Every structure is written in C-alpha cells, then in structure tokens.
Image (cartoon, rainbow, N blue to C red; front, side, top):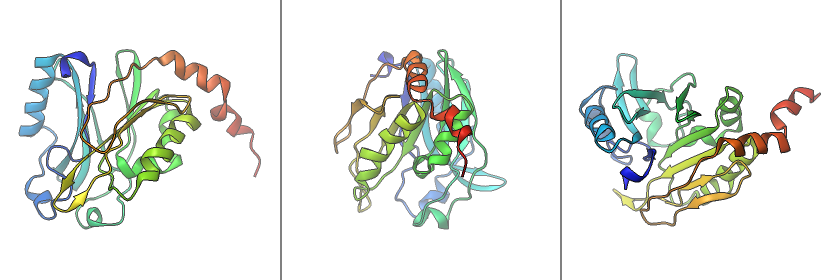
Length: 228
C-alpha cells in the first residue's frame, strides 16, 4: 500500500507498543536507532514518507516521541509529546517542549501526539505557525470515542486545517483500543474514517481548501479583536 501514498502516518508508540509497562524502558531507542534506520530504509524503498511513534531514550530522559523520514530516507521531523496524560505514561515519560513544522510536497506539516491534540491551544498554536496539515499519532482507548469522533474533526474545523489522526486498533495486553482513525478536512468533514478494526485510510490533501476554510471562517484573525 505504501507505494500508493506520499506519506504514511502510523500510531503512537508504534515501534515499541503502547500498553507494555516496564518494557517501554527496554524497548526505547535513540532517534537514530535501529528502528529509525529500518524505517528510513523502507521510506527509500517505497519512495514514501513514513511518520511513526516510538519511545525515545535521550540524555534528558525518556520521551514519547514521533519522527518522520522522507522518501529519500532523510529525517524530516522529530517531536516529543508535550502533555503527558494521567495513567501509566506519567510513570515513564518526560514532557517534551516546542512545536516545529516541516515542509513536504508543498505542505507545512505539524505533529501533535495523542493527548496533545485534545488541547485547543496546541492545534491553534501550530496553525498560527502556518501548519496546513496536523499529524496526530495516537493510542486512544475504546472508552474515549467522543475524542476521535467529535473533538478531532472540531479541531480541524476551528482551525481550518487538515488533521490526520492515526489510532491503534485491537487489543494489547488487555487494553482495547478504539480504532476510528480519521482524516478530517478543513471544513470539519471526514475525508476518510476507519472503524474499530485495523484499516488503512487514504485521502488527498489540497492546500487550497485550507485557504478557503480560513477565509470563510477567519477565526485566526478575528481572535485578535476579542476583548475579554
């Protein structure tokens, strides 16, 4: 399938697994570790950018991270999860800092990892930086359906951007994932939506639709006129 896509987005902690308790430490890798090398080789093989989540070990600590390799195998982005949610993650991961964009095929792209996208401030921030597409690798449990089904399309709508939300599916060590990955358009409509089972979604990203949506509902400019 990868040879039919320009960019492949994979879920949060895809490289090591999510609900794996202490194994998260032993499976953590550096940003240029063996998994990164293997993914970069696949990106070159299929001439497709690959964006995936992994547990990153670094001198500063352990991070829930994501990286993207371009079709030439070169690293395009590297981000660390900003907000660590309640639950097992707080026992292992440090919070990352900063948001950065990368350019690919004429698009300005940002990364927010799972819980990060549930804050309106983060999506608004990266949109303010110029993002047209926001990639969200996630591992959302089955009891959080409102997030994937309502909140994420709303984030796309209120910022006038594309938002690609790649969630895990199935069960891992007793944890049931929701699935329901979605590619939301700048008008809040669903360009593609998965069910509960593993699935590959495809959608075309048209930057012109970002300009149209943001001109039609100028939240980004009109917010400066608000007086509280």
